Image 1 (tube, helix red, strand yellow):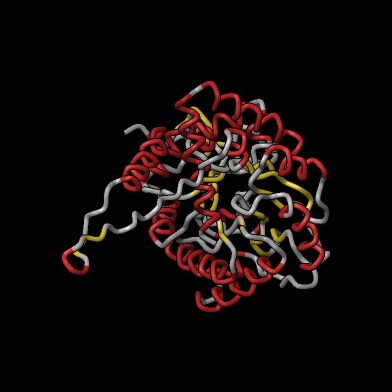
Image 2 (cartoon, one colour):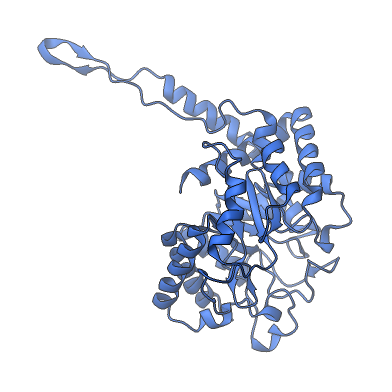
Length: 378
């Protein structure tokens, strides 16, 4: 079966299952009782194309204010996720007030994913009263797993108390060794690595994820298939290419282990992986997303892009093309964090493509169903 037909086929099976006549059972005095069919629920029932497409976008706003552009994206374009960006030292109560302005606009059956980057160390968006000062991933990696789990439970609870429902963490990128960290700007340059061996990274990522879950927050492992060996940052450099990672690399095996232990969301890098698909950034590559992540690693959860709004790595593509290509590759959520002004163009392009291309519409439906399923799991 073609990947793009997944949702249509699944929906058909569910509908047939819901409509099938249940077996009659013996009743009192020789009568028969026909059990009531168990109803099936289609998460997309009643949703327009525009509403389905909206679920595939997460749009940024400064963490200290509900920006009008992002409010409009939620209210007018049915956007299903908001990302709190930048740095805030205003504390949990102030953050909750910002979040409430967005969540008030979302229907009860399609609650917002409210996300941020709360990794620790130099990458901790939310600070101030009500938020702990989180150590860097390097320091978290020196903790025993039980202690990290307990701390992450606290950190997750703090996020949940402020209305945040998703943490774009933990980072599971594999930097080869301490000497290589300094020449790896996106990860090693910010102490974002848990360590330098796959087993240690998996152990600590598992502990962090379990803590976030216990605290009431979804977590997203990143950046597939790994940014630990690149020599530049995709945020501010074009042509970033990994020349060493292949489908059997230890950096990929980390994701295999994380998926096996229950990771339900993965962020895909915008770097090019020369030994996997040299023709396109990973977020635009069906070979990487559908073939490797969903196929070889058997991942059935939500796939999110790294930022596609302001990253220099993808600037050569129009915002419209970035959105369409990422969905076509198999991604579910397009992250529009740095430059929310381009969200409208991206959303319009995906809506237009879905209305004109049935195969692409199937991809949109499958992605929206996965996002809504994730939301209902809270």
